[in-house]
Image 1 (cartoon, rainbow, N blue to C red):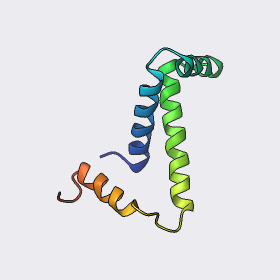
Image 2: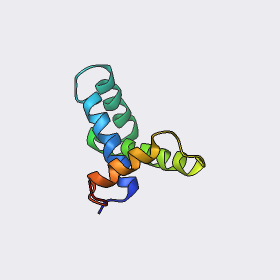
Image 3: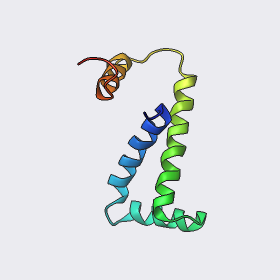
Image 4: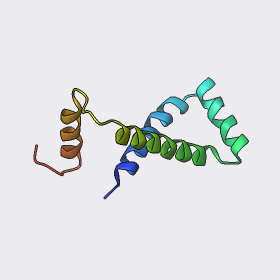
Length: 86
């Protein structure tokens, strides 16, 4: 079973792959960032995904009040992962 960090990273990676999978400025920026960091583009996508996941977890910890729709989103994620019944 994935951790919440893994789930956040998967979502971030998916978004980045959709954006950077098409030739153009975002794709070029990813390749340039990877080269500057000494990583392959694939390693850069993974690095970015976990960096974003860590930021999301940090924001989640900092947020003390529940935002509108947060419970609905939580239940949706739990259903998607088979944690609660539909």
